[in-house]
Image (tube, rainbow over all chains, first blue to last red; front, side, top):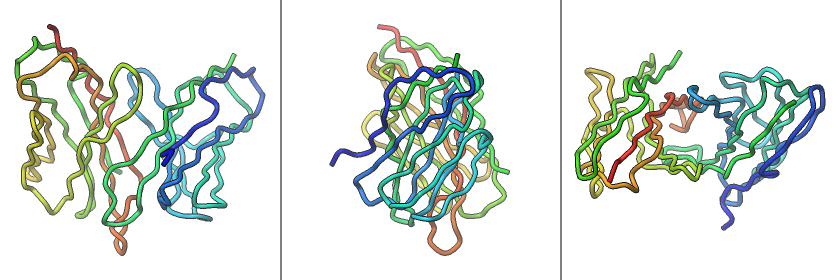
Length: 114
Length: 119
C-alpha cells in the first residue's frame, strides 16, 4: 500500500492564482480530511469528508473548496491564493467507523504564496 | 464547540528523565475519541494512541503511558526514561463521534508540545 499520497511536495504561487492540492489513499478509508499547519497554531481542520459525495467544513474553510467523487481522492482547491494561505498542508484518512484507529497522514505540501 | 488545550508549548528534559505532556479537552458530547500524535523533526505525523470516551483504562506501551481522566477532562501522556529519539512535537486531538456509526466527525488538535530531550 502506498498509504496517503500528496502532490506536489512544494509549491510557490502568486497572489490570486488558483491551484489544486492532490490527495489520494489506497486503504479504502471512508474518512478523509485536510489540515493546515502554521507555527504556534497546531493543525487546523479545513474540510473533511465521511464518504464519497459527502463533505463538510472544518475550522478554517474560507478560500478552499473540496470535492469527493471517489473514495480514493480528496483534492483541495485554492480558489484565489492569498499570502495568508502560506502553510504546510496535510491530508489524512481513516476508517469512519467504530473500528477506526488514528488517522494516516500524507507527507504534506509546503505552499508559499507571494 | 470542542477544544483541546496543551498548555506546555516547549519542554526540555535530560535523557533518561521521565516527562509528562498535559492535554485538557472540552466537549459537550458523551461519546468522543482522544488521540496523541507525534511529529518528529522530519515532519511526518505519526499516530500513537486512540482512547474512547467510555474507556478510562490507562494504557502502557513500552516507555509510553497514557492517563485518561474524565473527571478532569484530561488525557496526559508520559514518557518514561526519555531518549533523544523522543524529541518531537506531540499533538493531542479530540473527535466527537457520529451517533450511529461511532465514526469521526471534526477532529480538533491542540497546538502541540515541543519536547526536546538533551543527551
